[in-house]
Structures are given as C-alpha cells and as structure tokens.
Image (cartoon, rainbow, N blue to C red; front, side):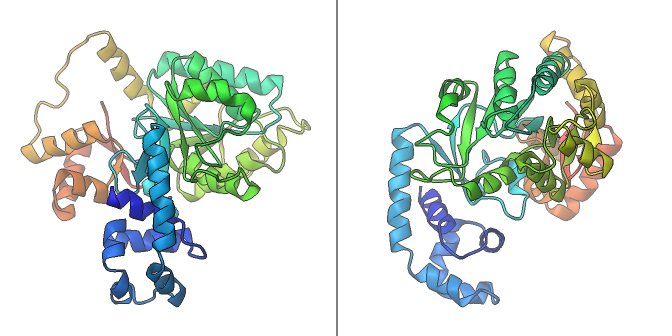
Length: 373
C-alpha cells in the first residue's frame, strides 16, 4: 500500500514535468525508493533541479491527500495501478510520459493480446456511425478477443464503446477527470455497463474537473495503451488528430477511414492519409492484414472449437520460460521480459532470436515481443 500512497503523492507534485518524474521513477525503481532516498536524491540524479529537491522535502500535504484517495478507492471498488505493477497497461508503461499511477474501475485485462483505440469527432455523422458499426461487427467475427479503448466523449467515442459492448467486446473509457464523477453525464448508463464489460480508467484523482487541458493529457493514455489508433471521422483540427499524433510519436500504428472530398468531418482523415501519417483502411479486414492479426484470429477460433495441437514441441527450458512469461503478459519489451522471466538481457536476446526463427514469437513496433498463440 505504501507504494500506491507514494506514487499518488509524487504524481501530484506541481511544476515537475511528467517525463522528468518518470525518469526519476525508473532510475529509482519505485515510488517507495524515491521516498526512502529523497534526502540524497542528487547523488542518484545529479541533474535534479532545486525545485524537485525542495518538493521532495515537503510531501506531508500530498501524502495526506493521497491517503484520502486510497480510502475513497477502497470504498468504491477502484484499483490503484502503479507504473511498476504487472496489471498496469504495459504498452503505456513503455512511454516516456506514462502516468505514475492510474485509477481503474472495471474487470478487463488492460494487457490483452490485442488492443485498439478508436477516436474521432464529437459530431459523428451517419457515415461515421455506419463505419464503426460495420467495422466492429466484422472485427468481432474475425478476431474474437480485442479490447476497444476510447474516451467516452460524444460522437465517435461513445459510438465505439456502444458497438463494442453490443458485439460482446470489452471496452475501456479513459476519462479526463476523477472517477467520482462522469462527463458527459448522459453517458452514465453506458459507463455503468462498461464497468462490468471493460472499465473506466483515469490518471486524475477525485474532485478533478474535466478541464480542457485534461483532455489532451487523457489522449496520450488512449494512444499509449493500444497497439493501434483508428481515426474514424475528424475535422481539419480536433482531439482525434491529437491522439493520432501522440500515437505516432510512440511508434504505434495509426489508421484512418477516408471520407468524401469536401465534407467537413472527413478533412482530418483525408489529410493524415494524404500526408502519410496514417494508413488508409476501409474495413476490418484491411486493419487485421496491416496489423498481422489474421494468424492470431485463426488460432483463437481453433482453440474455441476445441482443436488441440502441440504448438512448440522443441523448446529449450529457457525458451519455454520466455513462452510461459509471454503467455501471462504478452507484448513485453525486452527489459520487462527480462525482469519477469529472470533471464539476463544478454542471454534473453539470443533466446528471442531463436524463438523468432522457430516462428513462436514476432517483434513488434515499440520493441515489444508478441507470442503467436
């Protein structure tokens, strides 16, 4: 519990950039270690600013506020996910500006094999609604297990969530405020259903309003926790385009549906396709082919139908350890895989190469490794 308490308190320090905070956290290994060695922080981080050092000496108020937050979470079935926790979204953990702590109410695994973010305008047209409905239905037929992420806003977001629920997918809404409230209130019934078939996720504490700047911060989580981001409809400027830009900066795949020339809510999609900052898709099949998900979908269907096969008959004990680790936490970076398998990185690199040659794993964008089963 002290790790969660300290992570919450540290994440609320004013005037300290998120990147600097994450860098300090990774060097120290945990929020607990930061607090234990806060009087000697400059020995560990010589470039630490005087402001950071002073902040670390005056944490009492932040710790009391963090303690109140943990009590609220305990009373309201909200999980506190710290950056070094195994159930923290590992794709997001790779990002330089990942939140030190997330608050989560739901039952979906945030590290599922396939995660896609669907974003776009708040003024979704009938064309956009039809695209989402068809995409979700077709994707469900071909790839039964996908976590769908969006921001629970009007338009494309809520349409994506509702169609995901209708198709039996789990779906997570990333909020721009604390979990003691819901914006917009009109979406509360859908949000309630999502807590039983997905979840609600936020980096913001209770009593945090849905301010404009929080939506931009929220967008980096939408982009960072997914394998790919899909833009459905967007004006020439908008939050969906911001999310796509962030996803691209994280070396994640970005896709967009094209729209009619001259239509206001097709401009953003057509522009990023023209500028080669997004790949054009017209269907779920296009998306799956681009992502290389067809093989995984075939294996999933075979397993659902009870078809048994010996996947990896000739693995060394070390290779089997890596496979077992990826079975529980797929799509890990080398450093995370090394930590969770207890295999040194130098030795692990050779094992990963061997597994890739055997067709057991494949490398993915962002330096992660994916188990092909």
